[in-house]
Image (cartoon, rainbow, N blue to C red; front, side, top):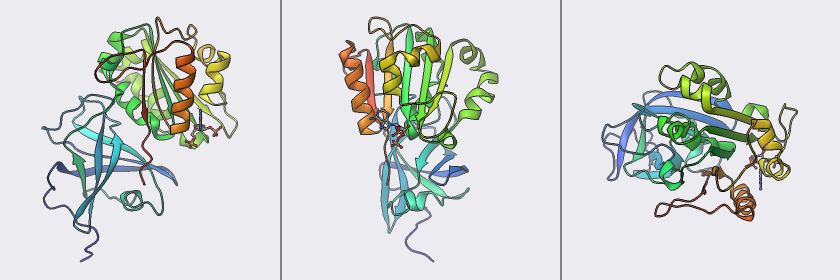
Length: 268
Ligand code: A2P
């Protein structure tokens, strides 16, 4: 038997061993999977956990945001595939029925309590940074706190717009969430390196006011609007600078603010 990959008979301390239920390959470098959820796993929509495999007898894990909302019975994660990445080179080949490790203590700053209430809630995501927002756009609490929820997802190529069909399709018809989604969710997909109805970086589109026009909402206002950011370090830094220049104040787990930020984990 191959000793490099352990089928995780018993979970190591600090982890649950969960069974993979489905795997979806979005592109050659992007995939997602769902797995069972231990009833003892508690988290808030928008948080992340350590996820991985047992390799050579030891846990090999990276931070992954939950794509699934807190109320869902199963878990979902979105990942890039890095061919020489220690974890994702293996995780991308995961099959239904195999086991994955799920850390017992999810954490993170992209949670509703870290923001003050307000008018519009903007989710600014690039690439796999959409993951925590897929969780949050399925949490009724988010819709109860804001008039509009704007999910601005920007990627290089159209095929990287993961969950697009779901957001504009099945989610709108969802029995529990459909009404909130139809009334309050504005989905704003954009592409930077191919033709697409909305093109350009979110930073550039916020600078010119194009993003608000595309979303059909009032210009960003720190006295009314709230923002969550999740992308690469450069994208996070640029968005943070843009917001701070307009008077937004960063919130955290001890004090709510008018924006919060977290890195979209590039998990090698
Ligand atoms: P661009 O194609 O102009 O680089 P990446 O895969 O590099 O993380 O990029 C994902 C998306 O984020 C791309 O659309 C990319 O645009 C955009 N992006 C990259 N860096 C920044 C940044 N500093 N600010 C805003 N958007 C960014």
